[in-house]
Image 1 (cartoon, rainbow, N blue to C red):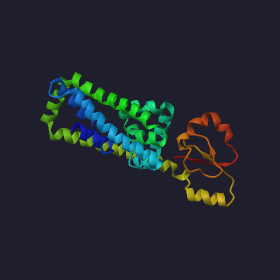
Image 2 (cartoon, one colour):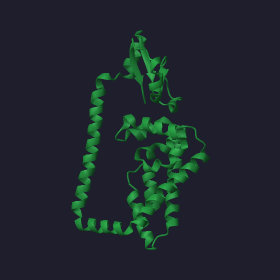
Image 3 (cartoon, helix red, strand yellow):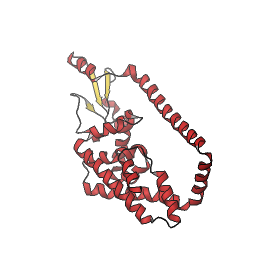
Length: 252
């Protein structure tokens, strides 16, 4: 069950593994589960799923990242945030990636897209998976009595608890979608489509284009004549941008 559940979650199926790992830790304290087998099954599941994502990232690159981010609640910032984190910490970000929902989804394909060596990826990914599994199993082991109390309370409340949790989840999703709608509404008047920009350039308009994508996008398509200034370098390089012309920012 541990193997199949974690394999499904790491394969992008929304099945949270944290409650399962906490329960496994609690049961392990009673002697009915071997902690070493929990770690082994969880690690194998992570390695299988992550290696598939790593290979897809190496073969398909940004198409895989776009697909993952398109189904997230914040597709406009998904690639940017994860790329910035990966650029800042490199492969070491894999040590904590599984604790961060957004990063967990794209860490492996991002590593593949960055050209990382497979053995180096396996090393950091394995360590990250062990840290992640061990942390929650240890919490379940230490707080097994408290978890049992919570489980008994949930069993008594039954349908009421399920309705409350469903309501909280619906409220959170609704809030995230409202934030996204409000954000896009504010930007609507300031956006320009690729086709509109192409037509304006062909018409000879004096437009200054700044490519603010991260350096991980160096192999991606470029707009002719665009100046590449990654967003994190804008505070230092902003004098390169003229103030007397219309500026178009090209992002992920």
